[in-house]
Amino acid sequence: MSDCIFCKIAAGEIPSRKVYEDGELIAFHDVNPVAPVHFMIVPKEHIDSLESCHARHELLLGRILLLVPVLAKEQGLNDGFKTVINTGKGGGQVVFHLHVHVIGGGKLSHV
Ligand code: 5GP
Ligand code: ZN
Image (cartoon, rainbow, N blue to C red; front, side, top):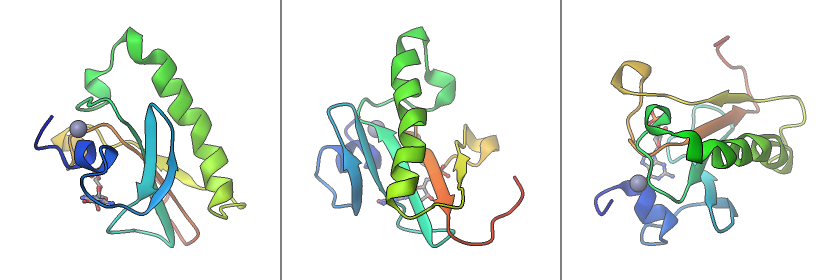
């Protein structure tokens, strides 16, 4: 997706404060953090949202979720964290490239 901001970040065309990268995934800090620690885990493959995932994405989705606590600990979130996936306009999604928010280090809303 040529006009997708997260594809451009994944390709290194737009700079980001990177937390992690491998062949399939990249994680970077949110430019507009809602808590002291706020980063996102993003598949390098362009997938619009959770609604666009198929059975072939099962392993990728599992890898993302297993990476969450590993990176959260690395970022100093030893007391827990919040994990959020906004899906669709009604779900508050703004960037239509699948991403998992990892948020912590401060007082958070209940949900
Ligand atoms: P969404 O509401 O789609 O789940 O959240 C998208 C998030 O991406 C927002 O929290 C927003 O601050 C973040 N974001 C938007 N553009 C950029 C960018 O260019 N770089 C980074 N690091 N984050 C971005
Ligand atoms: Zn994309």
